[in-house]
Length: 215
Image (tube, rainbow, N blue to C red):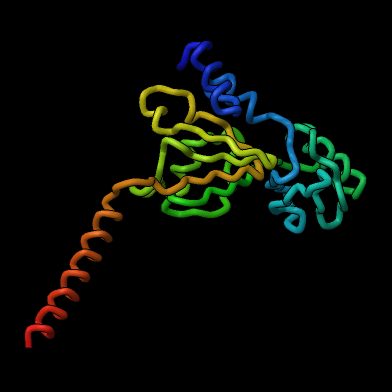
C-alpha cells in the first residue's frame, strides 16, 4: 500500500486515479458502483430462460430485454437494476421473481500483449490484472509507457514502476477504455536478430558479386 502522498503524485502524473490503495473496502465500493454505457449486464431469471443472458448497455444508457423492452439502467447500481427488473417481471405476471444481476465491463487491450482484443471483465479490474488476462506483455512491450485512452483522452502509465511498488498498475478501468502497449524502441532481441540476418544476406550478396567479378 502506498502512502497518500505517493498516490497523489501518481494521480497527478497519469491523470487517472490510482486505486486499490485502501484495501478490501475500496474493492467492495467499486464493485457496487453505478453502471455506465458500454457496460454489460449478465442477467439470470429463475425459470425464465428467454430472459436470461448478457445485455449491453447502449449509448443512451438502455438495455433491451426481449419481453421487457427498453430499460434505463445507466446511473443505477446493480441492486437498483435488480429492483427495477423485478418490478417489470411482476407487471408481466411473474410472482416473486428470482433474479440475479452481474455487471461486466468491456475493455480493449491492444498492441504488445499475447492475446489482444476486447475483454469482458469484472468491475474493479485494474491495469495489471487486465494485461495478465490478455496473456501478459510480449518481450517487445514497452512497459514504461502504457497508453490508456479514455473518453478521447490519452494517458501514459509507467507500469515498470509498479514492480517497485508504484500504484500505477492499480488504475481501475472502465468500459470503453482502450489499453495499448507499444513496442519498445531501440536495440531489442528481435531487432538484433533482424539486423544479423540482414547483415548475413548482404555479405552473401557481396561474396557472390566478388566471385563473379574475379572470373
